Length: 98
Ligand SMILES: [Zn+2]
Image (tube, rainbow, N blue to C red; front, side, top):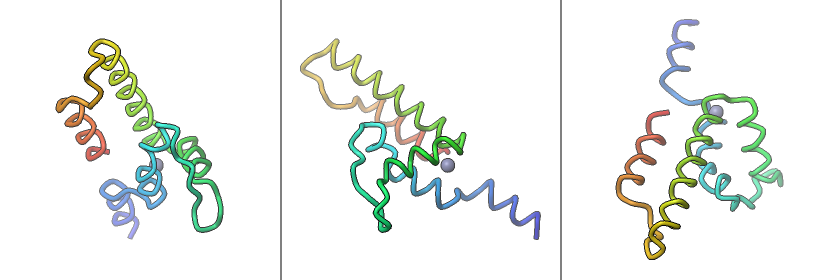
């Protein structure tokens, strides 16, 4: 029984992590203004989870770094505002590998 539990912990994310990751992009963008069913701001839920979950906190830092890279690209090439294919691939890889 205990072996099964630890095995699951490595292969499946807790529901709190999945919920956090659903909203993480909007949270990093400062656009997470919705509330959950209990009337709690989702941003508060995400922030609380990031404070207690190192895996999700690391993901948030990677998203912040990627946003910074996108802003730098936008300053260099002012006509290009979309994410480059390589950045999109990196984002997809990061989101699917944690
Ligand atoms: Zn988490």
